[in-house]
Image 1 (cartoon, rainbow, N blue to C red):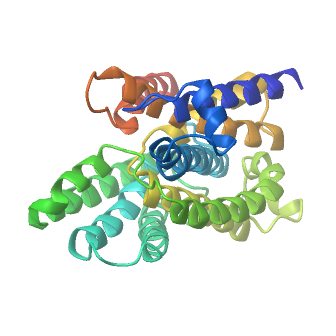
Image 2 (image 1 turned 180 degrees about the horizontal axis):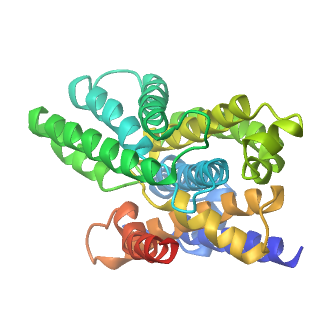
Length: 323
């Protein structure tokens, strides 16, 4: 209970900092006037149209990426599994950028559909290559296939950036760096129900995750349709990661860091640690977004770069530790 209250308090603090800090600083007094409807038109515009949607997208996106990483690690029983490492984020991002680069005037409603399709396509390729008949997933093949698929989609993405117009280039490079770009209420209204619905489905199946590590025969003897459940969990993980990438940009390592912090903090793999990992993911993304605004006197550093500075060394540490 105390840990949940601590996490909730930390989230409230970063939410407050997120709506305060930016090119135009909004004090606590300004926020009070905005909520009372007595602030200037420019302050109200900044808060309602830019700061608050951006904050919500960071919270929802971080939560969804953390949930995805939790499911991937639990289903594969591999502590290194993450949407960004296994190519899911790259697959989703490739189709999104392909659409944004050549159909800039298209509908934002298409983005999550394309992202989900690209993410699931990448997941099918990776897990298809890593699956060994009559055995569990090969962990060595899983990482190698993920690296290969990630590299392939990244190369295609770079090819797209070369071919797009100059007007779209700056946006695309910003997106690739992991900027929180979906700062609109339309984006919030699209992403929130997706993560809420798929997160609820995943929450109900979290108790199955430890059972998947018992082996095929023992799991089947317990009445678990192991292939069906594994494919369902992997599909949920890929869908959530891809949906978030469509609106937050290419944020890596959240699905790796958040579940690890949650399980180390609570000392167990459970529904509670699943929920806590979502809160930690939100905290990491929003904290990185705030820090990126403060690092430079003018402009900002994309949240994805800030997260990668932390996540990349941690991934190498896990890789060495796992042997």
